Length: 487
Image (tube, rainbow, N blue to C red; front, side):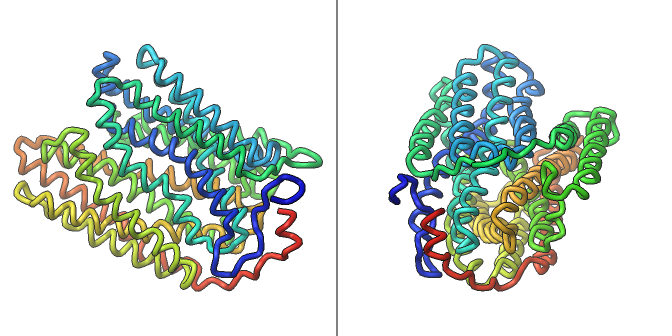
């Protein structure tokens, strides 16, 4: 530790090695990030149980998840400004503490309304933690070994779908739904303690940045309205209903207004949308949209398939989906290493091709198809998802300076979330129409097969677009020792 008492982030290391201080920072933020990801996936399998325990209709309880997501979109756009004012360390610890408060309040909720309100509190904190996690690590890495680092920092995203549903099922089997939120307390407390020790004291000096309040009033409600409109497709009268079109078109108008206002402002805007002019950011954003539709859409289809077609309960469906998560874990570190060696383009290409091929069997599934065979297919699908997503996460930052990294993180995260919401809404609507009037198990199975073909189509669109990603990366020189000592 240097004489100032502040941990150095980038001591000189070999070009193919990651600085140990960066690994410590990555581990620190992962612990806090696990609280956010587990909370999301645990709740996703508990909606029916929450509806029964809180004596509320399922349409109301669905706001436990939707409210959380809308809360995230309130704060995602302000992360860059908040980091410039508070510094990354103080913002991370403060947001983790706020998430802890939200978790405790959720565990103490007395009815559906209070639970939804407290979930929005959690979402507000989660909207800061998720982009800040990637930003802190990418800024510490200084463009070196980003593939391997993103393989590590995205571990919460991979572990959430594996452990979350199983943990949620076990907690619900114990008969106490409040433990679904109490489990976050451990991650928040340990994550906050690690952050106080391992994150560098990067509090800003000099003049504070000014918040683009007009931009915030355009982007945050605009993005939230788009998400809300997409989620209403499944529960409303259809895509053409006023419940869908009013928030969707209104939100799009606000987002377009934000872009038109922000383009001439450049870096002074709430989010620098000029970064879409960078090939790395633009190509990654398009693929993030499609990967969001693929990943989140499948998170809707696959559990429903196991429960409605195969008759599994929430815990059983979660256990059957474990192979997909294991595949994602097994491939991500290899994908990170090859992304650093040969570039994101061909790694992402192979990954998306694998996801396409491994989803096709679900379009032909019958009532007699072996569960073991489908689990093996899910393992391969998970391998493809790990290979596809890691290069996207690293390619978005290629060629960007230190100050542009928070902007890029916010842009790709918003695009991915909108893509995921679009995928869920589109596949839910397709499944609803395909299953309408299905009187037999065979007809319901056919409806799922039709919907899986649409999921395959979304993923197939990404395959040729991978060729627009950056190719082999240029070697990044070792950081200057004097600069590293000051980092």
